[in-house]
Amino acid sequence: MAQITKETRIGELLEINMDAAAPVLLGIGMHCLGCPASQMETIEEAAAVHGIDADALVKELNEKINAAQ
Image 1 (tube, rainbow, N blue to C red):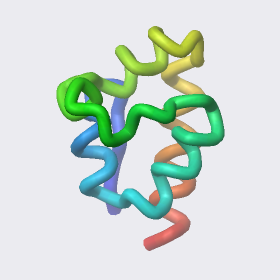
Image 2 (cartoon, helix red, strand yellow):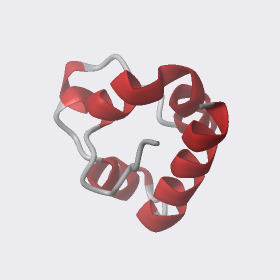
Image 3 (cartoon, rainbow, N blue to C red):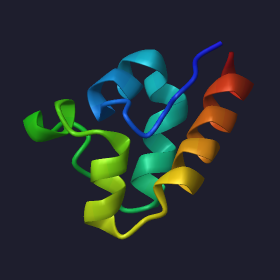
């Protein structure tokens, strides 16, 4: 079972489960999933840029990813 944290990089997140994670990110306005910078950016950094609560985002991502497994 995957455990996503605020320190998980967007690129790592998408490798873990793109099908579950991408709709969550796209749904909150993070449309730069294929951007080279997103490969090095953490969930916490991306959330800060987009004005999103990183803890809530991590919780939702973990729920979606674990439900998909």
